[in-house]
Amino acid sequence: MLVLAENAIGDSGVVALAAAATAGAFPCLTRLLLGNTLFRDAGLLALVAALDAGSLPALRVLDLGKPKQQGVWSEAV
Image (tube, rainbow, N blue to C red):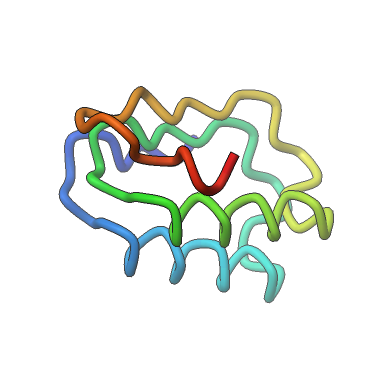
């Protein structure tokens, strides 16, 4: 389990996390908690790309929380 919730890592942190996942850093990660990390569309798109690529094969729980600002993620989804 990786808990990053309640840390202001923002888009840059989630993009870095997605890049590490794509590079094979988390093959056994089963739970990823990202609630209230202040990421927006760019972070979400990077994470979705990593998931689509199968970079987190063991992931069973993904908690994104919910955006605190209206319109966040609207372009991405």
